[in-house]
Image: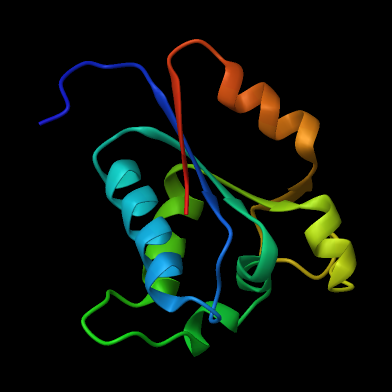
Length: 124
């Protein structure tokens, strides 16, 4: 379906339970791309930062949407998941609090990822 493209998709999720459809769209697109073999980097910012914590994705519910925990698992096993440094700090989330495989990084790393050759970015 996607051919032999060597691209990175950087998805920034800015919404969590406060805007469930937008949140689910970010996770769905990121996990679909990851499952298709695209190099995916999912950034958790704003209210989506809470999903970096164990058990939080399991609490998310949206009718007719794939379970967020399953989508996150796909991304964690095939791509990268990053929680925004400032967003995490505002929520008192530290490196020892997040799921295995989730890193905390800031704007400089985000800019580096989206400016890389062949990178594409989406913000939800």
